[in-house]
Amino acid sequence: MNVENIQSVTLEEAQAVAQAAIEKAREMGQPMNVAVAEVGGRLKAFARMETAWTASISIAQDKAFTSATLGFSTQEIGEMAQPGQPLFGINTTNGGRIVIFGGGVPLMRDGHVVGAVGVSGGTPAQDHEVAEAGVAAFG
Amino acid sequence: MNVENIQSVTLEEAQAVAQAAIEKAREMGQPMNVAVAEVGGRLKAFARMETAWTASISIAQDKAFTSATLGFSTQEIGEMAQPGQPLFGINTTNGGRIVIFGGGVPLMRDGHVVGAVGVSGGTPAQDHEVAEAGVAAFG
Amino acid sequence: MNVENIQSVTLEEAQAVAQAAIEKAREMGQPMNVAVAEVGGRLKAFARMETAWTASISIAQDKAFTSATLGFSTQEIGEMAQPGQPLFGINTTNGGRIVIFGGGVPLMRDGHVVGAVGVSGGTPAQDHEVAEAGVAAFG
Amino acid sequence: MNVENIQSVTLEEAQAVAQAAIEKAREMGQPMNVAVAEVGGRLKAFARMETAWTASISIAQDKAFTSATLGFSTQEIGEMAQPGQPLFGINTTNGGRIVIFGGGVPLMRDGHVVGAVGVSGGTPAQDHEVAEAGVAAFG
Image 1 (tube, rainbow over the protein chains, first blue to last red):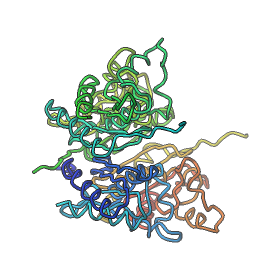
Image 2 (cartoon, rainbow over the protein chains, first blue to last red):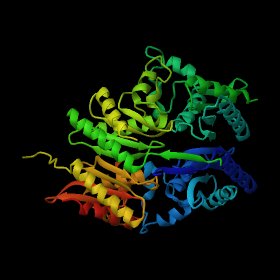
Image 3 (spheres, one colour):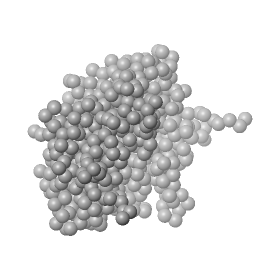
Image 4 (cartoon, chains in turn purple, green, blue, orange):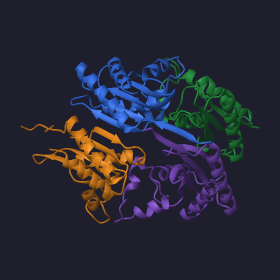
């Protein structure tokens, strides 16, 4: 049949991803905001630790949006978005929702993007590490 | 002392509120989006059930924002926002984030608003009922 | 398996819906803008006739967004959005993208919303009639 | 006479441009979003292939907007928008709708811009190639 067949991360899966990320952040002692997006970039689950930076609430969601809608980690997109590189300027598209530093990672299944996790609250390197801990909890 | 009282719902409390609302929605057989806001209206926790209406993702968050930042249920605000009533037009303030139909309810502690729950996915009456189930899980 | 399985209108189907609507508008002699949204409300196909009102470009898209993300025609939502009715105020949610007058109609398959058509350029009654001509072309 | 020249691409022309671009994308095996803007940058026609990146829906439209309203390809504008170059920062004007990487190309007639095509879904080089295939179908 000629229909688009979109698989997406479920709520239970998204909650497990978010919880694994939160536990990693607690272990690091760094308050974080964690967002999980479904296929299409829509918010599926979110958790915000006490005292995490408040600007990071939307950054976490936008990192998840970015990786779910472009299929790369925000770290990788950041490299392509440097001056002189192919995607320089992409961060002002989509109403400014594209984030070009680490912390967003796609959730893959059978070679397809089915969602993404976005983390914000520490350095981009810390955020990426916490996001990867979330991804590791995804079957 | 003249300081802003920053008592707020914690992540664990917000997750318990969201979970109780999700369980009520499952019991009703109606897919819902559930948001919990902390003091100041910022997103604290979010959970989206499979197949819930996608327009409701932001409505749920804005209902939580509305009740956390105005201190009333969105059902009550809706009565005050009818033509000829004192708050007619309030829904176009705050960048359009004020919702004036049922589904948002404040979370109170010691007589103070410490957050709010916002639910969207069914009728406003159903959304309000699910939000109240979330509030009931708040100690 | 516990995955979200989203069927969506395809490009060929969306183009056939848009073309049928455009032909109906030509027959009526009323220049129109026609948008088709996929599951989740994202734009799938669009066609704008010469001299159609320019404000209607975004209204057509937002009508398709509204019906795809809420599952009702914008005519029906308009009835529920009158003062004193359950959804009064819904048109200021979702960043102002919810339209509450006729011209948006969901595309259904096997009892599920798989997209929507949105038409703008004439009266809401004309727009709804043109949208229904588009829906009729959907298998 | 001092009047605005409102010559513009017609719907039939815009649909032919979009179709040629879509066929090129299919030939390349890369799912794409294709937008055609009329004079003034307003959306005239749009087509989205199954599974094309969702962030690219608005990027395609904004590339068409950019080339229709500035008269250059987005690739050329991208060169002028690098640090130290004359248009550095232009991508944050117009509410963030100016795109500064390849995929947008003006449609010209008798030396005048009468519209533009914008493509997004692959690399900027692929997007530009698909846009040029669309332009080639414009008489």
